[in-house]
Image 1 (cartoon, rainbow, N blue to C red):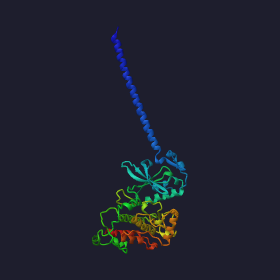
Image 2: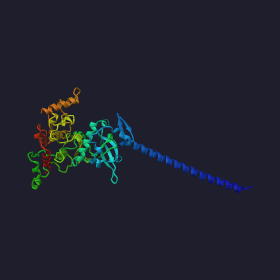
Image 3: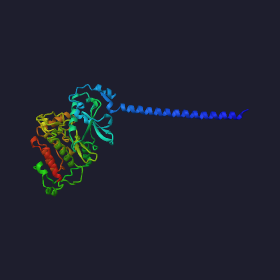
Image 4: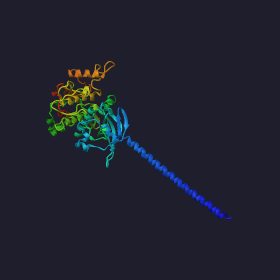
Length: 416
């Protein structure tokens, strides 16, 4: 008998079994790793496939397609297509650099998202991403109007106007304008809250009076001694960074820039919804240049372009209008900021009821404004100086309204 040989054989079988187990375990681990990597890759592919730049809407149904094949949606004939304009090539941002987030605003023609812009060598930046509504993607007029808005926005550079960053697309329907993101939202949303919570007031001395006869030239050449003697005479607290007054000062400066000879643009839709606030609410900036146009010798437009309560009488009548139409809208904005309500919404004869449609209410407003019977109202707490400026802006005859330069001059007097 050879007992030790048998014992040795048994020991070798155990070692071989242990080695086999390790091999099987290693294979299993490898398989799990491979499957995990494959799953992660598939998830990445699916996320990439569902990115905004692969999204196409056809007859109201969302579909996701390969962006290389998305050109099949580019069947519209667009005159002066901005995507093929070499002067705008510098503004193009690769679509893969933009991560689209939640919707922050939606209008009749466009939709705005918060997005993240990722640029090599720079930290991620929050931006606002504006696109056409999906249902407008096959409307040639809407597409051309959006391209015009991009062209206007790209020309503008001013601290009181929302900054244009660039544009992005992979096909015509997802053409996007990338702008500065304003974390404080729009002024109208703030005013709605302020109506009941009263977070912000005018910060203007009730006894202060503005010299409305003072020209822009004289205001800029006033002596330093006089300025020092009147330092912040018009404000209750010159250290308050945000007030109803500060918003109007910011907007007067924005209009002054737009109306300057070098820019020469009429905004045509000045109202609280188109004024955006910084995250710290220290600054207000003018936005939405979808209806803006360079001034011509003879400009007319229909009331449908703007919102009726803010539209000047001459525009409602369809006759020639000038930059003074923006000044009238500025006067309406002053009432909007004072009362924190939509202009004329407090009038029972105007407010839509069970028997009065919005269209009928707008028609009534138009007729009464054109006839000179209706102008925005102000509260009893509104500083008299503000009312006097607003009344000048709301003059029926455009020639009687101040220029943007004069507005800045008047508001600057509060700071002297």
